[in-house]
Image 1 (tube, rainbow, N blue to C red):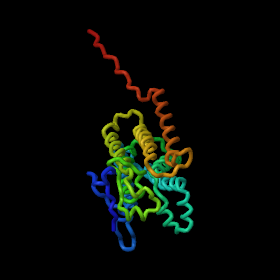
Image 2: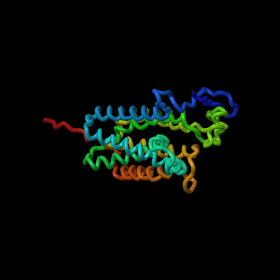
Image 3: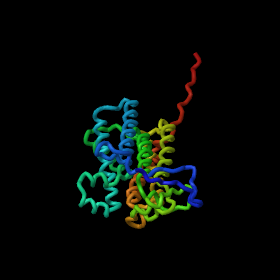
Image 4: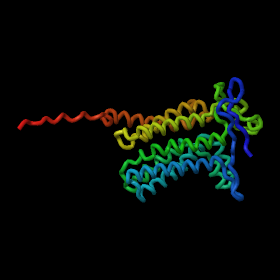
Length: 293
Protein backbone atom coordinates (compact mmCIF):
# COMPACT_ATOMS: atom_id res chain seq x y z
CA UNK A 1 0.00 0.00 0.00
CA UNK A 2 1.41 3.39 -0.94
CA UNK A 3 1.27 6.69 0.89
CA UNK A 4 0.46 9.76 -1.12
CA UNK A 5 3.02 12.50 -1.45
CA UNK A 6 1.40 15.63 -2.81
CA UNK A 7 3.46 18.21 -4.63
CA UNK A 8 1.72 21.41 -3.62
CA UNK A 9 2.09 25.13 -4.04
CA UNK A 10 3.87 26.21 -0.88
CA UNK A 11 2.06 29.52 -0.68
CA UNK A 12 -1.50 28.30 -1.22
CA UNK A 13 -1.23 24.57 -0.38
CA UNK A 14 -3.19 23.88 -3.57
CA UNK A 15 -2.02 21.20 -5.99
CA UNK A 16 0.50 22.42 -8.56
CA UNK A 17 0.95 21.13 -12.06
CA UNK A 18 3.31 18.40 -10.83
CA UNK A 19 0.30 16.54 -9.45
CA UNK A 20 0.46 13.83 -6.80
CA UNK A 21 3.32 11.38 -6.44
CA UNK A 22 3.14 8.12 -4.43
CA UNK A 23 5.54 7.36 -1.60
CA UNK A 24 6.26 3.74 -2.54
CA UNK A 25 8.52 1.78 -0.17
CA UNK A 26 7.96 -1.35 -2.25
CA UNK A 27 6.63 -2.32 -5.65
CA UNK A 28 5.17 -5.64 -4.56
CA UNK A 29 6.12 -9.17 -3.62
CA UNK A 30 7.51 -12.21 -5.40
CA UNK A 31 6.62 -14.95 -2.95
CA UNK A 32 8.24 -14.04 0.36
CA UNK A 33 10.61 -11.54 -1.29
CA UNK A 34 9.65 -7.86 -1.07
CA UNK A 35 10.66 -5.83 -4.11
CA UNK A 36 11.85 -2.53 -2.69
CA UNK A 37 11.20 0.47 -4.92
CA UNK A 38 14.60 2.02 -4.26
CA UNK A 39 16.38 -1.28 -4.90
CA UNK A 40 14.42 -1.88 -8.11
CA UNK A 41 15.24 1.56 -9.49
CA UNK A 42 18.88 1.12 -8.47
CA UNK A 43 19.05 -2.21 -10.31
CA UNK A 44 17.44 -0.72 -13.43
CA UNK A 45 19.79 2.28 -13.27
CA UNK A 46 22.82 0.00 -13.06
CA UNK A 47 21.58 -2.20 -15.91
CA UNK A 48 20.79 0.76 -18.18
CA UNK A 49 24.08 2.47 -17.35
CA UNK A 50 26.11 -0.65 -18.17
CA UNK A 51 24.12 -1.18 -21.37
CA UNK A 52 24.93 2.35 -22.54
CA UNK A 53 28.57 1.90 -21.55
CA UNK A 54 28.95 -1.42 -23.38
CA UNK A 55 27.14 -0.02 -26.42
CA UNK A 56 29.63 2.86 -26.59
CA UNK A 57 32.56 0.46 -26.17
CA UNK A 58 31.14 -1.70 -28.97
CA UNK A 59 30.67 1.36 -31.20
CA UNK A 60 34.35 2.21 -30.74
CA UNK A 61 35.34 -1.47 -31.12
CA UNK A 62 36.92 -1.50 -27.66
CA UNK A 63 34.73 -4.14 -26.04
CA UNK A 64 36.77 -7.13 -24.86
CA UNK A 65 37.06 -9.38 -21.81
CA UNK A 66 39.57 -7.11 -20.06
CA UNK A 67 37.34 -4.05 -20.10
CA UNK A 68 34.42 -6.15 -18.91
CA UNK A 69 36.41 -7.21 -15.85
CA UNK A 70 37.37 -3.58 -15.26
CA UNK A 71 33.70 -2.60 -15.39
CA UNK A 72 32.93 -5.29 -12.78
CA UNK A 73 35.60 -3.69 -10.59
CA UNK A 74 33.90 -0.32 -11.12
CA UNK A 75 30.57 -1.73 -9.92
CA UNK A 76 32.22 -3.28 -6.86
CA UNK A 77 34.05 -0.06 -6.04
CA UNK A 78 30.85 1.91 -6.50
CA UNK A 79 28.97 -0.32 -4.07
CA UNK A 80 31.69 0.04 -1.42
CA UNK A 81 32.00 3.81 -1.94
CA UNK A 82 28.24 4.34 -1.78
CA UNK A 83 28.09 2.76 1.65
CA UNK A 84 31.28 4.25 3.12
CA UNK A 85 30.06 7.79 2.55
CA UNK A 86 26.77 6.99 4.27
CA UNK A 87 28.53 5.48 7.29
CA UNK A 88 30.71 8.58 7.59
CA UNK A 89 27.76 10.91 7.14
CA UNK A 90 25.54 9.12 9.67
CA UNK A 91 27.66 7.18 12.21
CA UNK A 92 24.55 6.62 14.35
CA UNK A 93 23.21 4.43 11.55
CA UNK A 94 26.41 2.39 11.56
CA UNK A 95 26.05 1.79 15.31
CA UNK A 96 22.56 0.40 14.76
CA UNK A 97 23.90 -2.18 12.30
CA UNK A 98 25.58 -4.09 15.14
CA UNK A 99 22.19 -5.52 16.11
CA UNK A 100 21.19 -6.45 12.54
CA UNK A 101 21.88 -9.53 10.40
CA UNK A 102 24.62 -8.89 7.84
CA UNK A 103 22.26 -9.04 4.87
CA UNK A 104 19.92 -6.49 6.46
CA UNK A 105 22.83 -4.21 7.36
CA UNK A 106 24.03 -4.27 3.74
CA UNK A 107 20.52 -3.55 2.46
CA UNK A 108 19.93 -0.61 4.82
CA UNK A 109 23.42 0.86 4.80
CA UNK A 110 22.62 3.63 2.33
CA UNK A 111 23.59 4.25 -1.27
CA UNK A 112 25.35 7.57 -1.85
CA UNK A 113 25.68 8.51 -5.52
CA UNK A 114 28.75 10.63 -4.78
CA UNK A 115 30.38 7.73 -2.98
CA UNK A 116 29.43 5.37 -5.81
CA UNK A 117 31.03 7.57 -8.48
CA UNK A 118 34.17 8.17 -6.39
CA UNK A 119 34.51 4.50 -5.45
CA UNK A 120 33.86 3.34 -9.00
CA UNK A 121 36.41 5.78 -10.43
CA UNK A 122 39.09 4.67 -7.97
CA UNK A 123 38.33 1.01 -8.70
CA UNK A 124 38.72 1.62 -12.45
CA UNK A 125 42.12 3.26 -11.93
CA UNK A 126 43.35 0.39 -9.77
CA UNK A 127 41.90 -2.29 -12.09
CA UNK A 128 43.50 -0.71 -15.16
CA UNK A 129 46.85 -0.66 -13.42
CA UNK A 130 46.42 -4.28 -12.42
CA UNK A 131 45.58 -5.34 -15.98
CA UNK A 132 48.12 -3.00 -17.57
CA UNK A 133 45.28 -1.41 -19.56
CA UNK A 134 46.30 2.04 -20.84
CA UNK A 135 43.44 3.13 -23.09
CA UNK A 136 41.26 5.99 -21.80
CA UNK A 137 37.67 4.72 -21.66
CA UNK A 138 36.19 7.36 -19.36
CA UNK A 139 34.21 9.01 -22.14
CA UNK A 140 32.29 5.78 -22.63
CA UNK A 141 30.81 6.40 -19.17
CA UNK A 142 29.98 10.04 -19.92
CA UNK A 143 26.42 9.40 -21.10
CA UNK A 144 25.81 6.31 -18.96
CA UNK A 145 26.32 8.04 -15.60
CA UNK A 146 23.77 10.89 -15.96
CA UNK A 147 21.15 8.56 -17.48
CA UNK A 148 21.61 6.06 -14.64
CA UNK A 149 21.52 8.89 -12.11
CA UNK A 150 18.17 10.10 -13.45
CA UNK A 151 16.66 6.64 -12.95
CA UNK A 152 18.20 6.21 -9.51
CA UNK A 153 17.10 9.62 -8.27
CA UNK A 154 13.50 8.95 -9.33
CA UNK A 155 13.65 5.90 -7.09
CA UNK A 156 14.95 8.08 -4.25
CA UNK A 157 12.14 10.59 -4.74
CA UNK A 158 9.52 7.84 -4.54
CA UNK A 159 10.87 6.31 -1.34
CA UNK A 160 12.97 8.63 0.79
CA UNK A 161 12.24 11.28 3.40
CA UNK A 162 13.11 14.03 3.95
CA UNK A 163 13.16 15.38 0.41
CA UNK A 164 15.01 18.52 1.46
CA UNK A 165 14.86 21.52 3.73
CA UNK A 166 11.60 23.45 4.19
CA UNK A 167 10.78 25.93 1.45
CA UNK A 168 8.18 28.52 0.51
CA UNK A 169 8.85 28.15 -3.21
CA UNK A 170 5.80 27.23 -5.31
CA UNK A 171 7.11 23.76 -6.20
CA UNK A 172 7.66 22.66 -2.61
CA UNK A 173 6.72 19.00 -2.08
CA UNK A 174 4.64 17.85 0.88
CA UNK A 175 3.58 14.54 2.38
CA UNK A 176 0.34 13.77 4.14
CA UNK A 177 0.29 14.38 7.93
CA UNK A 178 0.21 10.66 8.78
CA UNK A 179 3.40 9.98 6.86
CA UNK A 180 5.07 13.08 8.33
CA UNK A 181 4.18 12.04 11.88
CA UNK A 182 5.47 8.51 11.31
CA UNK A 183 8.85 9.73 10.06
CA UNK A 184 10.92 10.57 13.15
CA UNK A 185 13.96 11.46 11.03
CA UNK A 186 11.97 14.04 9.09
CA UNK A 187 11.01 16.92 11.39
CA UNK A 188 10.39 19.22 8.40
CA UNK A 189 8.01 16.81 6.68
CA UNK A 190 4.96 18.61 8.05
CA UNK A 191 5.39 21.35 5.44
CA UNK A 192 6.67 21.96 1.90
CA UNK A 193 10.22 20.76 1.20
CA UNK A 194 12.74 21.25 -1.57
CA UNK A 195 12.41 18.23 -3.93
CA UNK A 196 16.20 17.96 -4.15
CA UNK A 197 16.09 14.63 -5.95
CA UNK A 198 14.10 16.23 -8.76
CA UNK A 199 16.67 19.03 -8.98
CA UNK A 200 19.30 16.37 -9.66
CA UNK A 201 17.03 14.62 -12.13
CA UNK A 202 16.62 17.87 -14.08
CA UNK A 203 20.36 18.60 -14.04
CA UNK A 204 21.26 15.13 -15.29
CA UNK A 205 18.65 15.18 -18.05
CA UNK A 206 20.18 18.42 -19.34
CA UNK A 207 23.69 16.97 -18.92
CA UNK A 208 22.78 13.82 -20.86
CA UNK A 209 21.32 15.87 -23.72
CA UNK A 210 24.40 18.12 -23.87
CA UNK A 211 26.75 15.12 -23.82
CA UNK A 212 24.76 13.41 -26.56
CA UNK A 213 24.83 16.52 -28.72
CA UNK A 214 28.44 17.64 -28.23
CA UNK A 215 30.41 14.57 -27.11
CA UNK A 216 32.25 14.31 -30.42
CA UNK A 217 33.65 17.85 -30.12
CA UNK A 218 35.86 17.30 -27.05
CA UNK A 219 39.40 16.87 -28.44
CA UNK A 220 41.06 15.22 -25.41
CA UNK A 221 40.11 11.59 -24.58
CA UNK A 222 38.55 11.33 -21.14
CA UNK A 223 37.69 15.01 -20.84
CA UNK A 224 34.01 14.57 -21.71
CA UNK A 225 33.55 12.54 -18.54
CA UNK A 226 35.70 14.93 -16.52
CA UNK A 227 33.64 17.91 -17.71
CA UNK A 228 30.48 16.15 -16.57
CA UNK A 229 32.02 15.24 -13.21
CA UNK A 230 33.23 18.76 -12.45
CA UNK A 231 29.89 20.33 -13.38
CA UNK A 232 27.91 17.68 -11.50
CA UNK A 233 30.20 18.07 -8.50
CA UNK A 234 29.71 21.84 -8.36
CA UNK A 235 25.95 21.46 -8.81
CA UNK A 236 25.68 18.86 -6.04
CA UNK A 237 27.86 20.95 -3.70
CA UNK A 238 25.29 23.74 -3.78
CA UNK A 239 22.29 21.39 -3.72
CA UNK A 240 23.67 20.07 -0.41
CA UNK A 241 22.64 23.38 1.17
CA UNK A 242 19.03 22.45 0.36
CA UNK A 243 19.34 18.88 1.68
CA UNK A 244 19.15 17.75 5.30
CA UNK A 245 22.53 16.02 5.51
CA UNK A 246 24.08 16.69 8.95
CA UNK A 247 27.13 18.99 8.95
CA UNK A 248 30.46 17.32 9.76
CA UNK A 249 32.96 20.16 10.05
CA UNK A 250 32.95 23.90 9.34
CA UNK A 251 29.25 23.66 8.53
CA UNK A 252 29.87 21.40 5.53
CA UNK A 253 28.30 17.98 5.03
CA UNK A 254 30.14 14.74 4.29
CA UNK A 255 29.25 14.87 0.57
CA UNK A 256 30.59 18.42 0.38
CA UNK A 257 33.88 17.38 1.99
CA UNK A 258 34.18 14.56 -0.55
CA UNK A 259 33.38 16.90 -3.43
CA UNK A 260 35.92 19.60 -2.51
CA UNK A 261 39.06 17.55 -3.30
CA UNK A 262 37.42 15.81 -6.27
CA UNK A 263 36.38 19.08 -7.91
CA UNK A 264 39.73 20.67 -7.02
CA UNK A 265 41.63 17.86 -8.77
CA UNK A 266 39.45 18.25 -11.85
CA UNK A 267 39.99 22.02 -11.89
CA UNK A 268 43.76 21.43 -11.67
CA UNK A 269 43.47 18.98 -14.57
CA UNK A 270 41.66 21.44 -16.81
CA UNK A 271 44.04 24.26 -15.82
CA UNK A 272 46.97 22.12 -16.91
CA UNK A 273 45.18 21.21 -20.13
CA UNK A 274 44.58 24.88 -20.88
CA UNK A 275 48.20 25.81 -20.14
CA UNK A 276 49.43 23.01 -22.39
CA UNK A 277 47.12 24.09 -25.20
CA UNK A 278 45.40 20.72 -25.31
CA UNK A 279 42.10 22.31 -26.33
CA UNK A 280 43.61 24.79 -28.76
CA UNK A 281 42.25 24.49 -32.26
CA UNK A 282 45.19 24.03 -34.65
CA UNK A 283 45.71 26.59 -37.35
CA UNK A 284 44.59 25.53 -40.82
CA UNK A 285 47.38 24.43 -43.15
CA UNK A 286 48.64 27.02 -45.58
CA UNK A 287 47.14 26.89 -49.06
CA UNK A 288 49.05 24.89 -51.61
CA UNK A 289 50.16 27.09 -54.49
CA UNK A 290 50.23 25.58 -57.92
CA UNK A 291 53.51 26.08 -59.72
CA UNK A 292 53.13 27.16 -63.32
CA UNK A 293 54.67 24.72 -65.77
